[in-house]
Length: 399
Image (cartoon, rainbow, N blue to C red; front, side, top):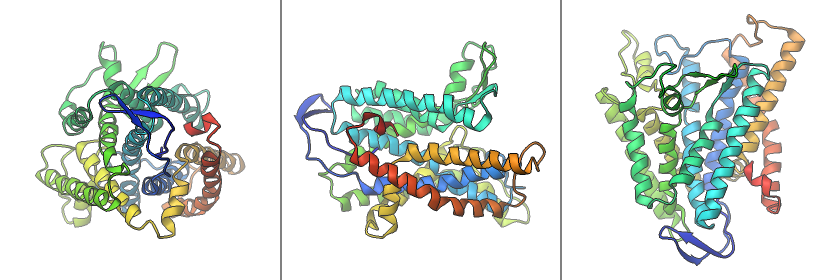
């Protein structure tokens, strides 16, 4: 979501109405960062298509994971945190030019649309219509986070930041709390914090791949930095604030990780291998995201946002910004194309990895990744321009 102005009075913070700001374009740096993350995300989904027969632990096993695969997984780990944080930031910018009622309605309806896409399209796309398991993944999670933000948005801005900080820094204290199936608190806790499987009475199973508690903290903090992106804040001042924030987050990551007592599974020394020891240091928990996982990925994302703003005149930044203006369209498009390619290969060549089709070497994954970027780029750019040109088509904003 970008920042677009709406005519008429708007309501901010205290509920007092004031004239809307003059219409202004989308913030290019935000869209460019989103576009960069989309391209990075493609790598992980190509791996899941052609290399899924190779089991990958999460967090990555520092003792046995191939180095190239480890580095690729470390790279793509920024995707979900940056998407969720930018969603919160986008909500603030949307809120700055719309009434509270309009913002709440948008959050709830878009949240429900995202949840429906994940349950009724993406899960079936990947696992088959007849599969007995529904995977509640990142799109479901973002939808839930938007609905929660809609419920909290009336709170003072500082209260939202405080809640976000408490969740992000404190949720690992809840890790020892576990509930078993049949316990009255099992289902809500599995949705919130305990990655697990929920058996439904209709014969289906829900896999809570993305328990939402920590991600709620992330969307609140993304919303929290929204005032830095208002027109009255000079770009240079915003970049200084972001630079300090990103450096502080990465420095805190190094300190807390070095102490090795809180925020994730402890790292360890691999005898005779400095490289494997470093891999252990950076092998972080994503499901649900640990404090250290979020400090590293969001800190990196903040610095990348600074780079997108500072180098806005470089050719790559506007290209990424156009690409990043249609994130949901790209998400649905590339997953659909990958599944079509996979099932076409399976039908033509048959299973070559047990019951699956896959490539034997990770280098083929990289080749497929590079080959798909340009073909996916052009339809995404077409759709992002369509959204900008046809603002009269209401449903386009949900993609």
